[in-house]
Length: 161
Image 1 (cartoon, helix red, strand yellow):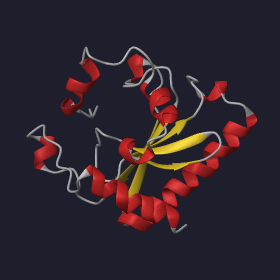
Image 2 (cartoon, rainbow, N blue to C red):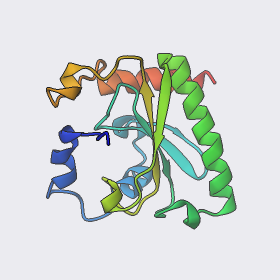
Image 3 (cartoon, rainbow, N blue to C red):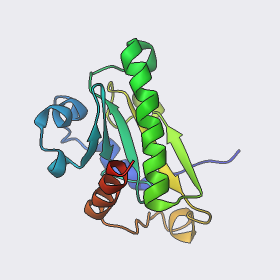
Image 4 (cartoon, rainbow, N blue to C red):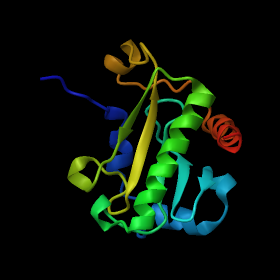
C-alpha cells in the first residue's frame, strides 16, 4: 500500500493557538478580501488562497454558511458549489496551465480537516513531476510563487472569465 505523507502540515494541524471561533466564518464576515486573499465571492460561497498550500495556486471553495458536510447544504448552496468549482477549474487552467487538478474534501478532524466543522473544498493544481526529492525525501514542500503573487494572478484569471 502506498502512503501519502505531509509532515509539513503537522505544525498547523497541531497548533494550540487556533482561534476559538471558526476561521472561515470570521474571514467570510470580515470584509477585507484583499488582506485575507479572498479571490472571489458569490451569494453562498467564496474562493480563497490556501495559506498552507500543497502546490502553487492551491485554493479553497468555502461555504459562507457554517455547515459540516454536503448533506447540510440547501439546494441553492449545492448549485452554487458546482458553479464555483467550474469557475475555479477554469481560472486555475488559465492562470497556471496545470497538467491536472486534485480536488479534495476533509470532513471532520480524523479525516484531516484543519478547519473542523466548516465545509470547504480544496483545488490543488498539479504538474508532471511536481513531487520530487524535496517532497519525497526532504520532507519539504517547494512553493514556487509567493502567496500574494498567486492571489493577484488568480484574481486576474477569475476576473477575465
